[in-house]
Length: 200
Image 1: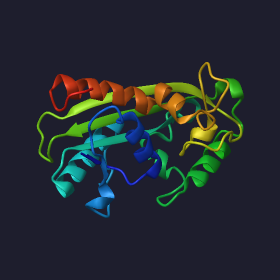
Image 2: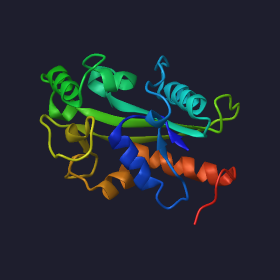
Image 3: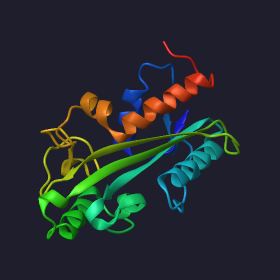
């Protein structure tokens, strides 16, 4: 199947999570240079748009995720705009810097945040019965980055009950806890239940 993303970090995470299954996962860049226009207002909407776009370009079943960070003190921002919070061509560093600036006057006790993920699987671009799975990872926003692993906002995210930021966790530990790991486990169960593929 094709993964509707050109994000190297996401590709690595999905490859690890799908390792127990007999799946060859291709990045969409193998088939098309540009991703879908993310015009949806929810993570679920955007995941479906991206999955259909990748399936149309590749002729393969496609899996897509749309995920982001919601911060209570910012009324749910950056939300679906997480990847472009600081502008259309923003880097992870740009987005993290803007988040810290926007939260500069917010006390640590009011920095609740959560990562949200919606995953969509389509058998083809016109699939009328796509499979959808969602996951949420609750935590707090730190006042400075910690850790060098992960990507996106991981270095600023302290999961509830953890002494380590998302960027300080091992890949295996992050996959066990994360919004994406949760959603993918649900999606894998759906895929097996719908006989899209078998497991070992």
